[in-house]
Amino acid sequence: MGWFIRSLPGLTGMGLRWFFYRMLFKQIKSFCLIYPGSYFTHSYGISIGRSFSINTGSLIDGRGGVCIGDSVMIGPNVVIVSSEHDFHYLGAPMATRNHSLQPVTIGNDVWVGANAVINSGVTIGNGVVVAAGAVVTKDIGDYMIVGGVPARKIGDRQKKQ
Image 1 (cartoon, helix red, strand yellow):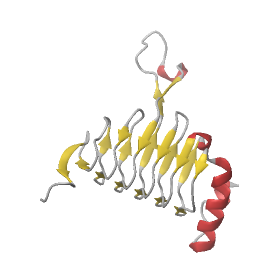
Image 2 (cartoon, one colour):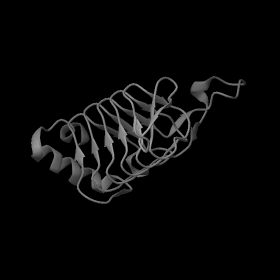
Image 3 (tube, helix red, strand yellow):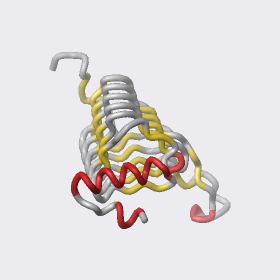
Image 4 (cartoon, helix red, strand yellow):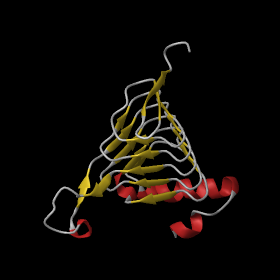
């Protein structure tokens, strides 16, 4: 059913997606904007706060757990993963190994720009801006602006620029 609901346009589509995903997610605290073409895998591990929006082409993998706070905006084509292949053991091909599950936590009032990637095991603080195209591999403190590959601090929302 997700393939059908995923592509419905307009407010009707957003309403149907919200209704559908609130049954599949671990938690959705209030109505959220899920734009057409957003993908969710292992949705049982995804918790979403109030005033959430996710744009077209984005993917959230909840296998290891994803907890998203209030007033979070996810731009188009963002990838958030909470698991990765176990690549440390050299005695067997990576494709045969189990996944390493590590939760992702995103605080309140966060904006994740287009085409960003958030890797497993990362905690993003409150008020953070993740620049478009950034690859987040480590925790980010409150009110930081990060960008680049890998993401690093490029500003601070609490200081006048």
